[in-house]
View 1 (spheres, one colour):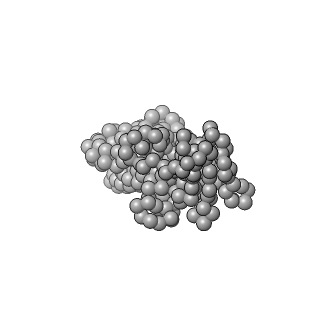
View 2 (spheres, rainbow, N blue to C red; view 1 turned 90 degrees about the horizontal axis):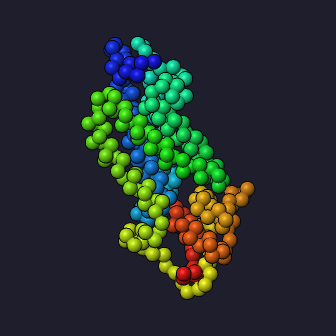
View 3 (cartoon, one colour; view 1 turned 45 degrees about the horizontal axis):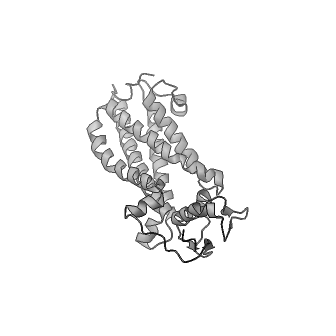
Length: 263
């Protein structure tokens, strides 16, 4: 189909469809940025520390649901164009219509849907797959900006985009930086350590909700059993200490307590 057909509608009907597509696309972009922010803050435990509440995962899930709903609506609206409508294949197969920005949007949305579907599977490989969501959000952000250029609304997306995209980018960078770098920058306090030669791990069973974040950080030490219960090594090997400390920092419920291993 013609890439410009959805951007310069020639009938009142298509003008209304284009306005719905633009509104739903901007809402999806907003929800996407908020979802990423909340997910990073929840994974690092900052939300719970600021709010004092343990139920942080539900907020992330609600924002993700709004992102999927508005993003899906944005794509479906193009099926209702009368003059030169999109086909189902255009919305499902990246690069089907040979337009790169459409392909980025299709691929990004499908990856986000796949990540959301697998989010409830508490297994190591699916937890790693959840991190693909970072790449998917990048694809969707580029799709939004290219769409703004094509439709002549770059100024609106530029002003809003800088505001919305900057915090997720900063938080995403902080999420993957080594703890030592964050400590030196003064962003987090160093973990309290007790004298001893070995690291000792203890998990508060009352706090632990078996989200599996610790398993994704230190799979050799933490494992979710078939019954959904967390199993872990109380005295991990020395080479696993950095991963265990990362798991303790990432636990959204702050259920992992460490002692020893002063080096």
